[in-house]
Structures are given as C-alpha cells and as structure tokens.
Image 1 (spheres, rainbow, N blue to C red):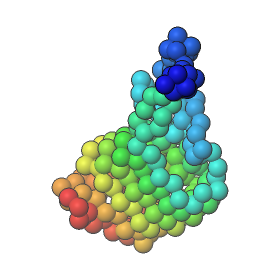
Image 2 (image 1 turned 45 degrees about the horizontal axis):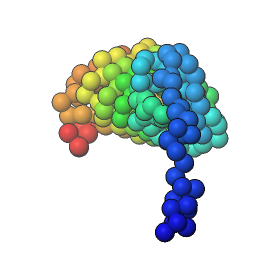
Image 3 (image 1 turned 180 degrees about the horizontal axis):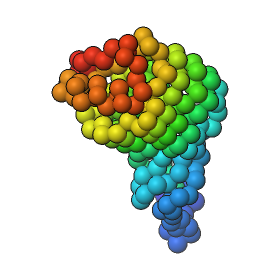
Image 4 (image 1 turned 135 degrees about the vertical axis):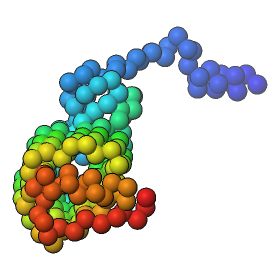
Length: 193
C-alpha cells in the first residue's frame, strides 16, 4: 500500500504547482497564420482571409472557422486581392460563414475553373473574378446576395454555367449581368432549393 501511495504522489502533482495560462482574445486588426492561410481579425470572434500561405495549391476550401489563442473565430470574409494572380488555383469552395468576397479577390486566377459561393454571402467586390477565362462552373448557394461589384464576373468563360437558388433566379440574372457577365453565360436553377 505504501508503494502505491508513493507512486500516486509522483503521478499527481499538487494543484499549486500547475501554472494557470490565460489565453488572450485576439485583437481586432491583428494578423495570424496557420498552415493554409493568413487571417486578419475583423471583429470579436470573426476573421477574414488575407492570403494563402502558398500559391501552389490547385484547390482551396475556405474554412468555417479557425482556432486562434484557444478561441474559435468564424471566417466571414475573403479580403481584397487575397488570391489575386494565383495561377495554379483551379477550384474554390467558399466557407459556409463567408459573407463577403473582396474586390479583386480572385482576379487573374487564369486557371480557375470551378467556384462554389456559400449560403451566407451578401456581397462580391468589384473585379472579384475578373478575366478568369477558364471559369465555367459557378454555384451560388446564397439567397442573400445584394451586391456584385462592377466587373465582378466580367471576362469569365462565355460558355460558363451558373447555378443559383430558384427563388432568386430573375434577381440574380439582373445583378450578375450588371456586374459584367457575358450574355452567352447560362444561369439555371440550383436543384437543392
């Protein structure tokens, strides 16, 4: 019994010896990096992607959230110029918490072929997908899109196929045409709604 008691004492250090580490809430405008992206804290418990860590990836999925200092922060934006001129990029899937895609965010991604825009996106900045001539498949899941900036879709493939929510097809057709979409691009109902 004495041997067991001595062993337990060695395994369980007294509570007073364990240091208490308090994690600091990430400050607004601070920059953090993980293995995939560089993030900027935009509001309490929200972040936006500033840029990828590597420009060699062909497929990018924007996460719903990221852990910083022990806190889970939603990824709600893709900042201006975030993926600009990323010539290797072929597929993008915007995270389910993204509400805004910044101006020129994917401009010059000359090999970009497929994009999925998440269900919470409200605004797409000017020239966000400008002159991505190989972009042929675009799925817009959001029913909340209010703004597509000037030239946002100008210069994508004239044979592109865009799927949008059924209840928004007429509204989005007008909105996307104003943003520079070619008249030859087909806009169809998204089957999931």
